[in-house]
Length: 168
Image (cartoon, rainbow, N blue to C red; front, side, top):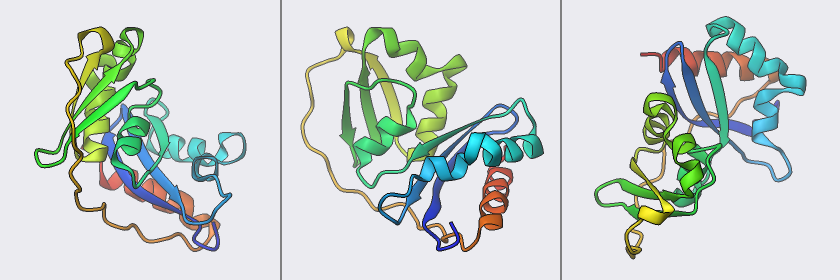
């Protein structure tokens, strides 16, 4: 952390309920999720106590690969397939039928936050209902860079500031 090995790449929040945070490591071998969670959850628990214990924080791995990023953003859902329409910024996500309620989340919260986080309008479909696959993935612009963290105390402060800044 002191070397700037981890960074926050994106955040989506429904204040008081749930936050999804995308993190990345710039150093091979450094687990960005583990770094943000901290030993025995100490860092994430410290942030949760500041914003309120009832708000849950999901920390996911950011990916430059759009399909991987959307798949991670829908965590803990097991995703079977993602079909992108980059021009329209839409993603059709096919999941096993038993994963449908997890993908959507309570009152649509999981898919709504994943959409905010990735910038894609995400439609979830059960595998048996899925239409034939569409082809083609069109390139889009990369997400903006977030400054790297310089020291340990910056991690909790950056995390807390980012969550508070994105409150609604």
